[in-house]
Length: 80
Image (cartoon, rainbow, N blue to C red; front, side, top):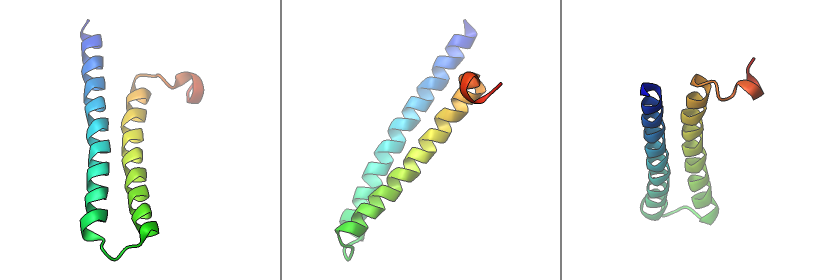
């Protein structure tokens, strides 16, 4: 029973981290584009948001891949 409880707590923290990362990406990039990048054109604004999205997705992917790797969930595809 303890393993299930530990597993669900680990998943809960990763879900919370995912939500915070997406919210931080959205709020941070839009505040930057809206208030600090006054001289940027539309393409440069898009690039700022796209780069922030790529960074957020990379952080989230690393968080979830390490979770799956520790539990052997990827064993059939990438492992022995």
